[in-house]
Image 1 (cartoon, rainbow, N blue to C red):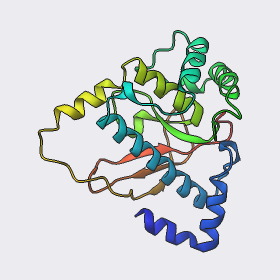
Image 2: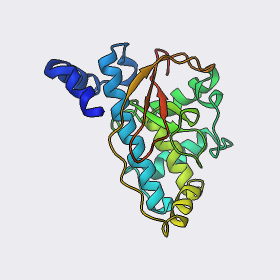
Image 3: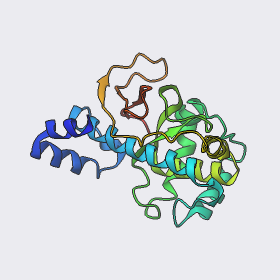
Length: 214
């Protein structure tokens, strides 16, 4: 369980990991203790956000104080980017990285922790499952999800949850059980963490950031 992973770090290890989580994404190394902490933090953020768009009409959500600026700047930079289903090349290719770098750097000093690591769904109609989850910076997450909310793309998740409202209530999600694995995925060979919970027995995985992710 997540609590056991924390306990295994010890006081010094937990303190070091907590300090590391306050650093920009490119500062992450290969320390397994930090990878566990990062995976837990990213998982919690992903779960909270998905629960939010499942229970509140996404078009009414405001993710930051600068939503209008983020959205307008994003669409100026990525006019034709289809956000319904993103591809890895649209985020990770050499050309894409350069375009994203120019966009992201405009928000340095404006959006807190703009280049911290988080998780992003490729297909906006699906949950955070292994083949639908990719590592991104915080400002990328904000830009894409603000646009998806305003353009009605996240409405499918919301409506799907509403249609299930008459069904027996599912138990609340619990803390994940994390386990490191080695990825053999063709698009990313970095380590990954997988988790399950009593309320969501399907295994979910995310790839940890590697050097050069930006």
